[in-house]
Image (tube, rainbow, N blue to C red; front, side, top):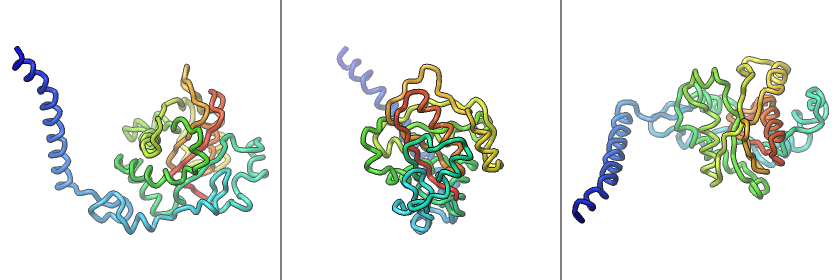
Length: 256
């Protein structure tokens, strides 16, 4: 009876080991047939090679707007000044602060396109590692969870995954805090071909917290690209209406 018990106890371990070996063998075969290539220069080896990583258009945190994260808005921001905010009927952004890792230029654009539209999901971890250092020390005080701007249902069906959700999970892992799914996006069109005014109108009231969702007081909202800020505004407003007292925003890239 004792021997039988020992054999039974080792069965799950053997199954787990066999599964791990099979997965590693599968990955090795795939790497042989389709080697990993840099998303920027297409050289084989890494998802983002060293030279391309160094050459990304990183945003200087000390020059960026401390409120909305615009790359050169430290002295006079071109994005969240009273005139621009007045056009949206606001006197201040609905979030406490925002930051982005890189400017949305050619190299960063290729990274985002390879991740979102070519299905290279492994880039979520690469991008998150570049984003995490832009979470300022002051942000971390009391920060309780990471959440994300959900993709439209059409975009999720087209890609087969929610790119912002994977990115938020990777950022949460970098920061060592939980990732929560609390927003839904029932009404809006794809933003990429819309003008600034159309983006703002498209996103007005387009986000809602999931029914019964419980939000912590301090939340980090993650998305891949900030263009006009309309999406972050709508999502931040929904989070605050659902009970978040402090919302901060973090994106991989910032258009300007």
